[in-house]
Length: 203
Image 1 (tube, rainbow, N blue to C red):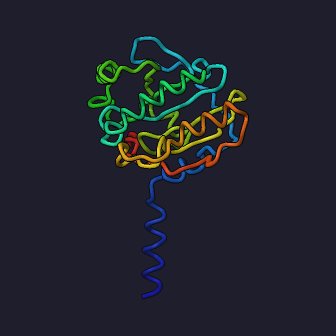
Image 2: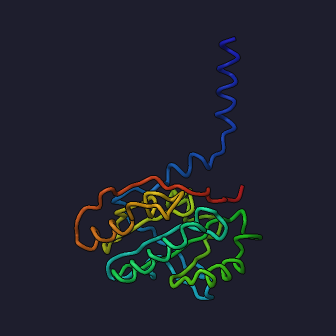
Image 3: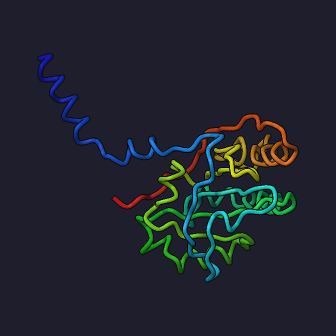
């Protein structure tokens, strides 16, 4: 019986998706450098790289999409965050990595419509083949990564302490992180748990 159980266990390990382990390997942590990126297509018709979107005090990268219920209910928080980043001279980009839905709900045309409806004032970029999501280790929408002017990651995780019911949040993690970063102080916490829909990678 024990031999059968061990055989079953190793069989399950053998067929586990490789991407599960690859994402963990590439996951970014505070102190890591902003990855280089090629020019990414913007929903407004232009294109930009991550470093091209930086401002004097750094860059905020948000992974998002068009249809996730967590994204929709947090749109007011996203707009506050956009305004806050601009006011503190921090660049911002929103990235759609849902490659598995690129022919449907997260198509480029759907992204253009969504960005216009939401009044996005920052680039809404297409992450082809989820390359950036894999590089960052991003797994949810919405999920944010904040980099300082030295291109170092200083915060990653959720925008606020209640993503499931953002109308009832008590703390805006991302605003606290921006404040500390701009003041040259350590960000605390520098990591929180992101809560939302899974990024839909192509199988």
